Length: 121
Image (tube, rainbow, N blue to C red; front, side, top):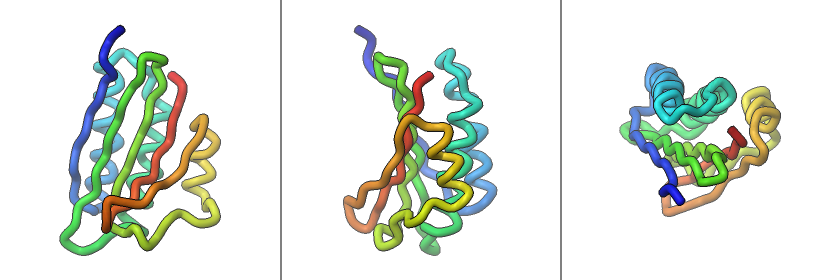
């Protein structure tokens, strides 16, 4: 049994960093030998939401990618606006829902929230 693969990066809450998160996701999943198209789109949507709706001046957002033995890719994007959980899915979260097996959000530790999605590779 191989240990799960894991990649994390902290980025500034800017549109440029959201684009960078997408590029980093493509390169990391490519290095792991996994398909990256759907995951890259999910990362783009979740990071755009973190930058647009979860931004607090001077605070970053965090991206984590992990892969289980079952080759399920889990994407987590954490920002510092726990008071703003996703509500009714707009265009971005509708895309996330269509491309992922499941997605959701969790609060904590304060002041963070994490929006996550899982995709089968």
